[in-house]
Image 1: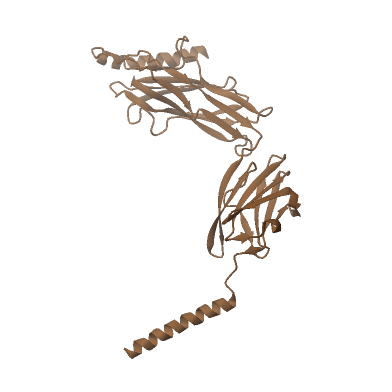
Image 2: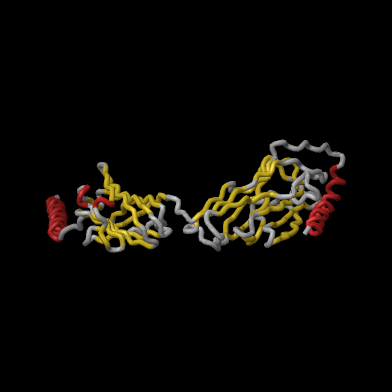
Length: 333
């Protein structure tokens, strides 16, 4: 591995020679002490229900506040029992986009959990100044031996480490000083409470409902049974105690506080196991449930009614009468 890393570094330095000759007479810009090499997002926290094993996450390898960047190489390490290498690539907006470049690598070790990747500009190309993305790294989530699991995703072997595997070089082949900033990865089996907004259309009118739960509830998954005056939705939990607080607009479904009923997998919860509160426009119903896949039904005593046949007849009759009057007026004119 060390021999291959040295070859990568040597190839990059060779690519600098022609440009360095062209720029020897040019004053060298001083390294920006604020230059940072970052792995973003800095915090990556997931749970097994929203991000199951096999899910791929994307990390941005970025440089901030750099001056005269001609070549970069990064060596990134993670815990190989928790994450697995998927791929590393240059996004369309990488820092050398539009220039002639020489990518090198990747050099991958699945057992060590490392990847090394590098890019050098071609001779005479314009160097990069500022903040931007070097590359993107995709890692696959693995099933850990136990929960919770965590590790750092970090740069390794940067100066003064010799030979360096993580470095930034300017157009003269001189190291650009930088501060490395790692990322953290956290994986748990606990559901993190999530607020989900749902749209529900009933009788041609769309209503907004809300669930706040540590179980997984798909967005816009709430259904309605008009005959039963009941809304229904599925919730997936870890098999331990889960909760949900559902917000229901009174314009859609209503009842007095004591009259609301909640069913979990078809079984009605006792009144003491639900908490109901309200304001002038909405009802808030809190409940707990223990099972992994749960169908929840919330039943009121009033639901927005359909237009009755009598009302429809009167509406049509009134419309016909208006039309008739307009015709009579038109004839008189």
